[in-house]
Length: 206
Image 1 (cartoon, rainbow, N blue to C red):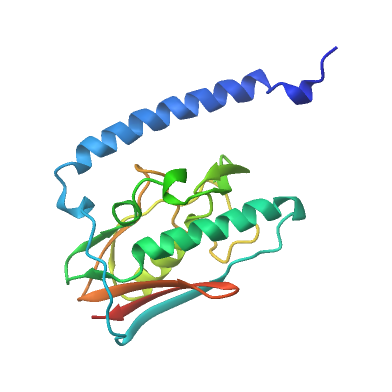
Image 2 (cartoon, one colour; image 1 turned 135 degrees about the horizontal axis):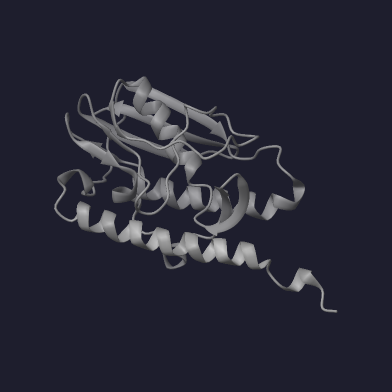
């Protein structure tokens, strides 16, 4: 008898196929809807002088998760580096909307993303660009602290054990139809950087 370890459970395989089909349909719908939506435009990114801090959120890069997930933790950090480069320096005029996916773009391997941790239906699974939710969570908290209007936000399907963001204070993202969007109350710059052990998100007056 062949070991079942080498063969995916039929139910799980069917669930994965169904999820992929649903995600494809939702991505297409979102792309059509965003095609003529000014809020879905990428905002300019540039070098800027430091301004007064409106909000700052710092969260640890490494948690106390299962040692077997160490590779996914490292992948998450790489994905956060890529995401930080794409968002850092984003300028928002008063009234403009920040869209996470408009700034980050497609989370593909060709753009530097690797496998990281993703929470799907209560389970941690490896997926390309996994871990970007730490960035969206931090942006959401910073936006709320700065008094921005939250235009779109989605919570995770289940709590994450080592997350500093409890249910209700998190903001998950999934390309491209699960987005985080907020409207700037005043002209501001979004700053994102990684230190040796933390992700730091800051909203500054521009």
